[in-house]
Length: 257
Image 1 (tube, helix red, strand yellow):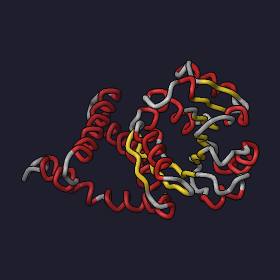
Image 2 (cartoon, rainbow, N blue to C red):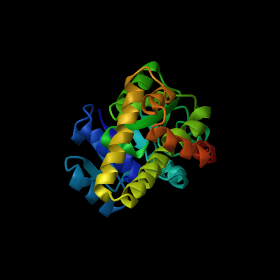
Image 3 (cartoon, rainbow, N blue to C red):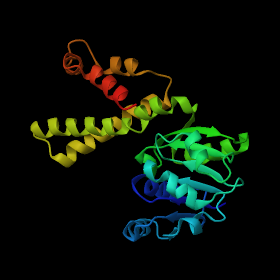
Image 4 (cartoon, helix red, strand yellow):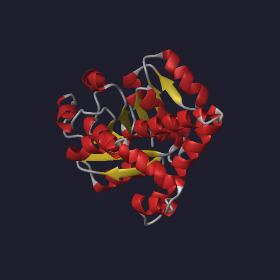
């Protein structure tokens, strides 16, 4: 099976690297197209066996799955140039571009379509990927879920829930990075080396995520386990609450819709 990625920027490139690391596609069945030769060369240095081209139509020709990973304002132009067929599956990564908008720019507007919102951790096979579908069979949906499950966790949701879910998963990863950055700054102020502080915080975040994902638990339960009476952790937790930490996170998520 051939998969084509149109656009090799931050997200398209991350997906290409993730697919290359997964077991579903041979590298010579992954085609990446981008007008920027430098971007393609950088991708090729990391994934030398991928096929790259600057010709979008050539890249999409014969591909069973076409992943559109261009900026939203380029979707119309690129889709009209691709001239996709109904036997192909379109996967749009463009945030905010609805199925209805996509259909207006297709030769065959009733072709199978997916809207997929991953996050940049897809390059490390650790994405939280959101999937909505239109005009697809159960087999097609299972295929796309399987593809993106190889690169993290994939979840099928209705299209009208994508905006809210994007705030939590796609935008949300930036808020996790912001926490890591702030915690690093605290560690440095307390005398730790920057690289050491970053490793400590990143591994702690990874461990916290693993506890949630791998067990029948809840954040409140895990917090209780480390906040002993009179201990140092509860003092820090209370400082976060006094500073409006939870409220700030909620406001940030709602602002990202």
